[in-house]
Structure formats: C-alpha cells, structure tokens
Amino acid sequence: MTSDPHIKARRENIFVAIGVVFVVACLPLFVTDVYVQNVLVLTLMYAALSQSWNILSGFCGQISLGHALYFGTGAYVTELLFTKFGVAPWFGMPAGGLVAAVIAAAVGYPCFRLKGHYFVIATIVIAEAGYLLMLNWDYAGAAQGIDIPVRADSWAKFQFLRSKLPYFYFALGFAFVAWLVTYMIEESRWSYWWRAAKDNADAAESLGVDVFRSKMAAAALSAFLTAVGGGFYAQFVSYIDPESVMGFQFSLLMALPAVLGGLGTLWGPAVGAGILIPLTELTRSFAGGSGKGLDLIIYGLLVMGIALGRPEGIVGAVTKRARKGRP
Image (tube, rainbow, N blue to C red; front, side):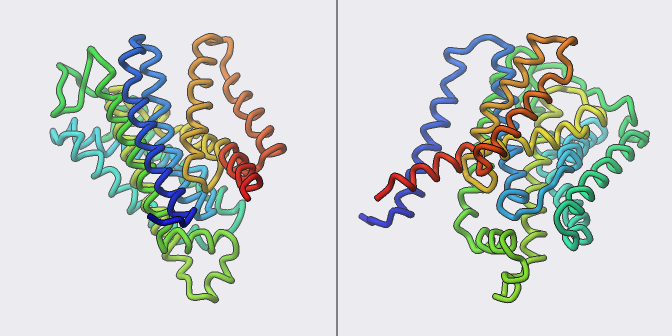
C-alpha cells in the first residue's frame, strides 16, 4: 500500500466523486417537485459545461468568452440531423461535438497567436459572428429557430414529456464524464504542457513544449464536450433559436462557475455551478419580470468578492488552507 500523499489524494478524489454521484442520483427519490428537478438538471449541465470550459481557460490559461459558439453548434447540428434527416440525438450529439472541435481548431489557429485580452475579445467577436450567421440562415430556421416535434416518450429519440428524470440522469452522467476526463488529463503530459504554457509560454517552448499544438488540443476537447452539452440542452427544451443557444449569457454561465469555484481546479466548476445556477433560477423565479438582470448583479457581486478576497476561488482557498495546516 503506497504512502505517497499525491497518489492517495488522487484515489480519494475518485471515491469522493463516486460518492457524490451516488448521493445526487438518489435525490429524485426525495425531490419530486418538477421545478426543482429542472433546476437540478440545469445545475448538472452547467457543471459539465464549466468543467469543459475549464480545460481550455483554467488549465491552459486561454480565457474564452465565446464558448456559446460551440454550445450552439452542438445544438444546431444535433437538431438539424434529427429534424431534416431523422438521425437520433445519440448520434447527433457526438457529431455536433466533432463539428465544434473542427471549428475550435479553425478558430484557434489564428487566435492562439493573440495574447491576453486580445484573445478574449477575439473569442467574443467570433461567437457573435456565428450568432449572426445562424440568425440569417434560412435552412436552420433563421431567427424563428427549430421547433423539435415531440410525440411520445422515447429513449431512441431521447424525448420525454411526462418526466424529467431521464434528462436528470443523462445530465448527471454527462457531468461525471466531464469530471472524469478532467481527472484523467490532470496528471497527463498535456496537462503539464498546458500549465507550463499558462505560466510562461516562452520558457515552456524553450524546454521543448509544443505550446501551439497543446492549446489546439485543449480547444478541440473543450469544444467537443461543450457541443455535446448543447445537443443535450436542445433535446431538453425541445426548441432552439440563435438567442436561446448562442447568446452571450451562455458563455458567461460557463465561465462564472469555474471562476467562483476555482480556475484550473478539479472540483471548482462543480462547486461553482452548485452555488450559481440554483441562485440564478431562484432569483428569476421569485423576482419574475421585475427582477430581470438581478441575477447578473448577483454574479458580479460574487465574482468581485472572490476576486478581492479569494482570487484562487473557493476550492483553491480551501486547498490552500488545508496545505497550511498539513505538517
């Protein structure tokens, strides 16, 4: 039995993750309210999306505010294949992921030569260009979007009218897969390359790190997972248009949980999503139309508080405190 604290911590993370999945999977036994189940589905989905965003922006240091482009790509590819050609979403979601990965590589090729805020601005501009393209593309429904026909509950078509539980368990599985992918790459060669490039790209290249190729890999993986989430969301809501899947708020909601929970950490996105998403949904529910934008104010206050008090995020702060108390 090894006494290496690092290996021990890795094993503990797996056990904790399995325990968390088991506890969350049991929640529907006690939570029967449809609205609360809806909030749980969205929380799990954004935990996965934020984890995906964290691969590029947290580990690699390339802050993106244009991930709505990949989310929307996954949604549109999944539903165009479904409504136009009868392809089941089980095949449409990975297809959307592959298309998004190609787009991410095409976007990254020129944009990874930019640094700092120039890269952030470029991601916003490209995502807005994608939004305008879909807004005027008649084949994809243009501004009217795509109304997804739902006739009966079906696992084959991944459509359910009477219960949200199938979506809940898919979202839970998706969140766990995104976490597991991050867990597996955290100690891989790619992860060390990403961290080295994040800290000092020039020094990393001088040591033989292929910074550009490693960033391209991070972008493709991040985009693939994000697009799968977009395909799932399209099936969940049964209707998409450019505003509902490619709006800037989606990019923001992917980034904020990771920032709140801890950039570049394994558990940060999940912790951040567990706080932010229920807070968002409850704010919208109780404030109604008069509280439009209140959730954004709360976001801003939370991020400002974290930036001023604990810039490493909640998980980073807890980890730092634990290390100080360790002999």
